[in-house]
Image 1 (cartoon, rainbow, N blue to C red):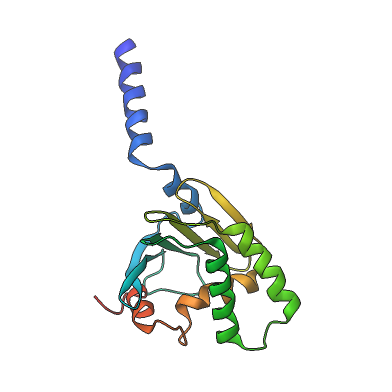
Image 2 (image 1 turned 45 degrees about the vertical axis):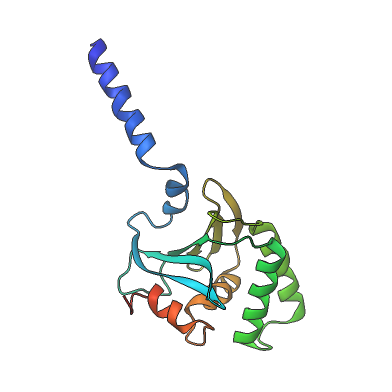
Length: 176
């Protein structure tokens, strides 16, 4: 009886060690997630981050739950991240979103994002008809219940007009 308990405790402990806590946090929305594609964002030859797309659907379905994992290779401030994201949303959608909406989204992103340094991860999860959630390696950073924001934000990477077409193709699994 004692040895069975020890074996059970050892097995449970090994399971807890084998699955990092952050992996289970975002995967509650995509329990059967598989990597679809990955690639690096580079700026003037400098590697900024490595992006990886996770989804249960292959080929990728933009209307199904998915996660975009960004692993940073450079320090980036929250302000830079928010400003760049807003600029890209404006570039992609022009005047579709009014100033009030963009200001609200700016506040949501300020709450969702953190300053990052080399090795940090931010994971954005798209939840259809609900919105998005943002995680660091080990905790939930924000739950933004705005489906329109979620679509606009993830369009930065997945819209056909994305600035980095090579990265988009790699994320979608269209390039090795």
